[in-house]
Every structure is written in C-alpha cells, then in structure tokens.
Length: 232
Image (tube, rainbow, N blue to C red; front, top):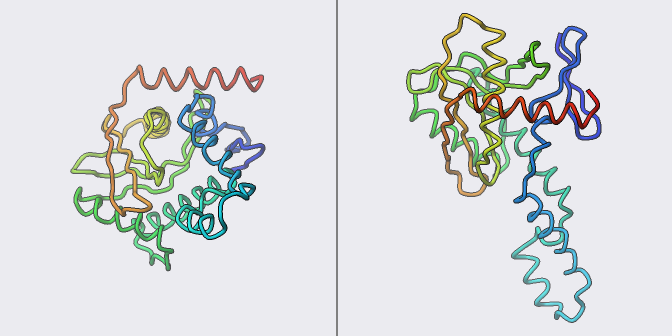
C-alpha cells in the first residue's frame, strides 16, 4: 500500500508501513542560484505598490502589461505547481485511453505540445504516473512514464517549467534505478527523456540524459546530505 504525505514542504511515501523520502524532496538540497534571482525579482517588484510618483495611468499600463510584478513569489509558484498537476493529469488520462476533460488555455498549450511530440516518436505506454521506491536506498517517487519512445523502452518525465535544469537528470536516474530494483528482469534503456512543455508558446523541448554510475552517485550524495540535514 502506498500513501503520500506532505509536511513543511517535504514529501514522503508510506509504503507497506515504511517511510521513504521523495526524490524531489531530496533534490531540494541542491542550490539553485537562478531561483534566488527569480525570488529577488518578484520580491522587490512589490515596490510598485508604493511608487506614488508614477502617474496612475502609467502605473496601470505597466501593471496591465506585467501583472506578475505585484504577485507574491509563493503565489506564482503555487500557480505553476497547479498547472503542472493539471498537465500531468491530462497526459495520464490521454495515455491510458481515458477522456481528457476541459483544459484551461495554458494547460491546453502544454497538452497539445505533448500530443505533437508523442505522435512524432510513436509513444507506446507501459505505465503512467507509477509510484516507485528503492528499499535499498530508502527513497520513493512518482514516475511519469515508462514505455517505448522511438522503439526503445525508456522512462520519461514531463515538465512545464521555464527551462531544463541539471538536477532533472538526477531525478530521472533515481527513478530509473528504483524502477529496475522493482523490475529486475526488465531491459530498460539508459536514455532518459525530459520533455519540457511550453506554457506560453505551446512548443516542446527535449533533453535526453544518459544514465550512468556517476549520475546516480551524484543523486546518492544529495540523499546523504539530506539525511544529514534531517538527522537520519
């Protein structure tokens, strides 16, 4: 039995009575300088509220063009997370042959980008939104996709982020190793697909990471640091 819980920003899985920390929680220990710049940009943007010297009509024109300027960074991140969940749910329904419900404008762009890519590579689904875990290394996660991509059995992860970041390769490596631990007789390609789906341009961007011992060791180093930080 799998049960997912969240507390203080950390996600855990209770699997058959044992607790496993999620892969995405572990990877939060990795510094993300670009995120700090993003926080600074949106945090200081609140100054627009108090810049009374800006004529009202100019202020309204600026804020109409850049509405995110007065949004709280946490609110923006929450909205992005909601979009990501909606995109994952739509793709999961689609690859399982279920009817996809009505989508909002942003989610629909991501979804159509996925359709375009999946048709191009001849996607064949083996599993979608699959919860996996490593009893050996004590972590767990939800794998977006396992199946055939261009005729090879691979795993893939969908992102609606603004870019592709290096730590995604560690996430995929951790998922691949856990999947193989649970399915020892499966021959799974070392190719791991990161599929970024554009929220605004409706285009897809693909990065194929190659799993390796070095990559998985880097993930285990992050896991060791997370364990240390959390007194494990």
